[in-house]
Image (cartoon, rainbow, N blue to C red; front, side, top):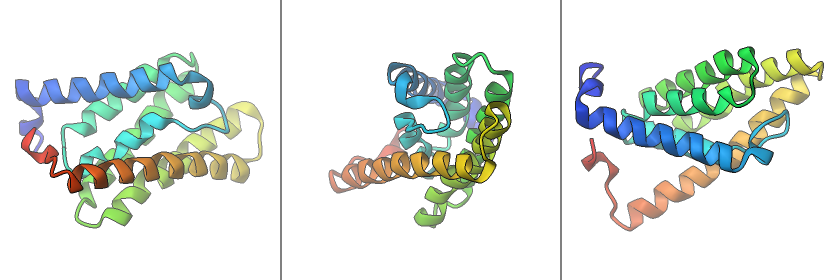
Length: 159
């Protein structure tokens, strides 16, 4: 699979996803950052279920968006959380509910822990707040994917 992600076609798909993620996050910056956040760009974290090219795209998009914070811990660990979640989503793609749980769990735990440690906030509460925002974004992603399926839009043909 890794070789397939390095073709010019796949790199272009990854780049578009990275640009969408970063642009949505930055455009909606007031709700995209902080302990209580709703990153609508996280709706894209379900794309690995149908497009493996989304894995590097989500990672790079998140990395670009996190550069905006200027916080090295967020840049590193927030981006890694998205990468791990994207890989988990792809691995569990045949089980959509479990796949959709990956971004919620990994971002809730990793990003929540980083935010709690850097902001002096309660760890469990901060993890829960991040996870709740992630649930909202993932639900939006599920609705979009469902609508695309009903409209017979097949994203797998892109890959």
